[in-house]
Length: 82
Image (cartoon, rainbow, N blue to C red; front, top):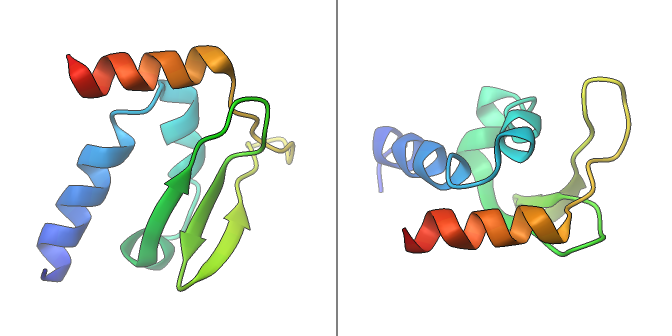
């Protein structure tokens, strides 16, 4: 997959997430976005992504850990299966 296809896939995948989650993920640098391998969603747990085989916790603009809620998981599933 070339860089353009990878970037398109990243944007498509992240926009299936609830807005608050994908906005938090977009705090990553463009380089980190192209190296993203996994987005980890677990209810009641921090949002993590895997970049170059390393987990990275995602923080919001105020420096607080982004926590995934049950509602986030339900909305994500609804968006994926719509």
